[in-house]
Amino acid sequence: MDDDTATEILAATYRALCQHGYAALTVKDIAAEADRSKASIHYYYDSKENLFAEFLDFLYERYTAKITGVDGSTPREELDSLLDTVLTDGRTIPGQEFRTALLEIKAQAPYNDAFRTQLARFDAVLFDQLREIIVAGIETGEFDDTVEPSVAAEFLVTTITGAHTRHVATDRSIDRFNETITRYAETHLFADAPAEATR
Image (tube, rainbow, N blue to C red; front, side):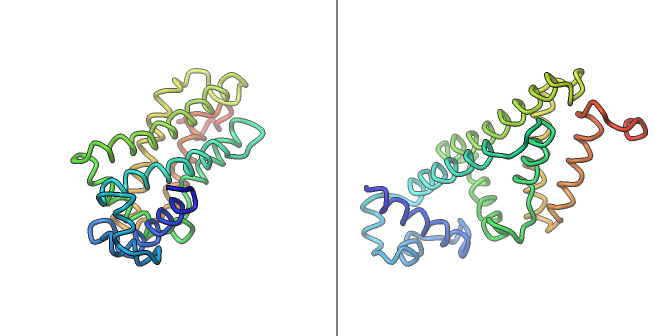
């Protein structure tokens, strides 16, 4: 399959996923979005599951570029930028519909090895990026040197993942979660945390 065809099908998958959700989505829906026949989609992908395994790889490449490309001249600025990147309001891209559909895909992971493997890669790249920022912050003296980078990164990944789930499931503001996690960073990670905030 040439790159243009792959991009076209995967972009159509994104649009169809936002519109229908994962559970109700069919290859016919994706074909309609791509303005192709159902048979032509099946020519490249023999099942919906195989198509979505490729789709998650497609998303992973873009997610990695987004996560590793955060701005900031200091580790503290990089952390702030990363938190803003992963905790944006649901009204922005990718939007509530996509977040909901992605949660449906995550719900399939315990039963689908390919999905679980792909989703673990998303988790790992966020963990690695957070850990690198925290290590750099400790080395420059911006972050408290008693912080264990792997533990802090694990906590942040778990909290971010939970924030996304709560946002979709309960319609809680993702901006509020951003404030909460930023507050955690200020009181537990940064070396210059205000004394009254650490009591």
